Image (cartoon, rainbow, N blue to C red; front, side, top):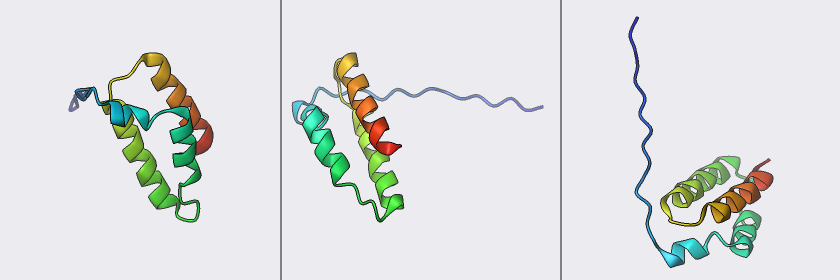
Length: 76
């Protein structure tokens, strides 16, 4: 039996105030409202790109959790 190893890769976080501003509550609400509902493939790709940016920006844990909860509600 072959063992497979998996490694958790945590990207280096950037301290970027402009990128951090895109994760404010109002900015996320606007981003969610502009998602293309008629094109689920594009919406999923945009959602994945936003999550990648969310992971890469340095922010307080409470703000990150709030953004994830807001995105989760819109995704379902």
